[in-house]
Image (tube, rainbow over all chains, first blue to last red; front, top):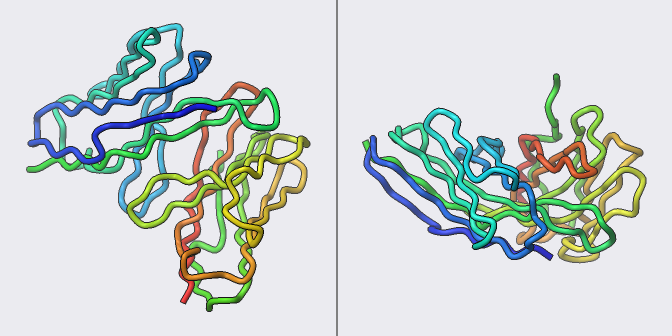
Length: 116
Length: 114
């Protein structure tokens, strides 16, 4: 199955600086990589995702890069704001134990704190 | 359209009692997942339903945990003889499945076992 590792576990940045969170995966067949943001007491929300046919995707201040050869992908947040403070989870699909279908395996999460 | 909904939003129970948590997935989503999230921790996979296939129960922590799903709709997660270590937020998610893996989460049920 898939093994997803996420670093760092905590990250503090000054408002306006950039934040980068990195994940590695083990299954070379994985082809879809989402990122979720979870604010305190709220549900995880999808913020951006990338498929393996592209190397980078941007959405305003958020970008994700993918290196298939090295099997890692990263979340980049530029011009950080206090409302970006949350836990961020990466994920990658993995074959389930009972067949050929895939489900997501999540990283352990990164607590991002943006200091005003 | 409507998102994933869960009920109850909060549940307080006494140790040893049984609890039942409910999840209503997004209409048309064939895949449904249950996760457990302890305070300050990540998402712990519990069980996965895909259409009418046999569920993947590989994440259930003990035989006190079970889940059912009626067709491609509502799912219930049952915890029997609850223990204090069962206290957590139980999150449900759904997706279109069949290679369309994006999961959409419900608001969760916060379970506290006294």
